[in-house]
Image (tube, rainbow, N blue to C red; front, side, top):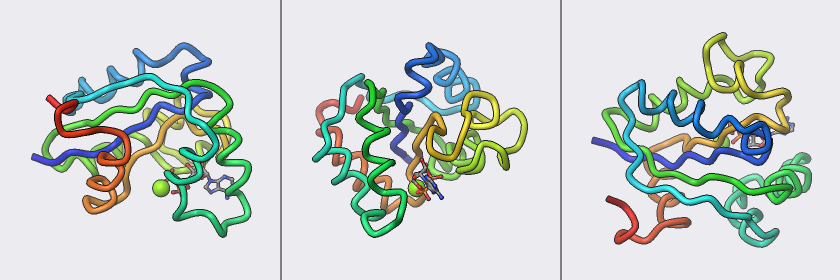
Length: 137
Ligand code: ADP
Ligand code: MG
């Protein structure tokens, strides 16, 4: 069993598709073992995406992530990290395979509906960034 971090980003929360996105996870063998809805502040969003701080899109990414509430979840299942990335689809929704979350619910590479950890090591760090062990059941 693996755990990975998922974030439903502000664009998808605004579109009222939290439930539809969660259904993709539950219907594909991923269990929600922790979840909270919150509004990120600039410092928290910047720290979370610190790995991208030198990329040209960093400021826009942080502004987007604080533009409205997000839903942060820990997903658990077999090969959860890879499974979640498959369900999400390509970073750019225009390149994402039909039937993936980003193809179906996202408009652009900036507003692309979901975040998912890209490795088991990053998943562990990202889960610890948002949740204490007692919040994961
Ligand atoms: P992913 O979310 O698929 O793991 P990255 O980790 O590469 O993608 O990038 C983090 C986020 O930064 C993306 O989800 C997207 O919102 C934004 N982003 C990535 N590349 C670009 C880009 N070229 N232009 C604008 N935003 C981008
Ligand atoms: Mg990434």
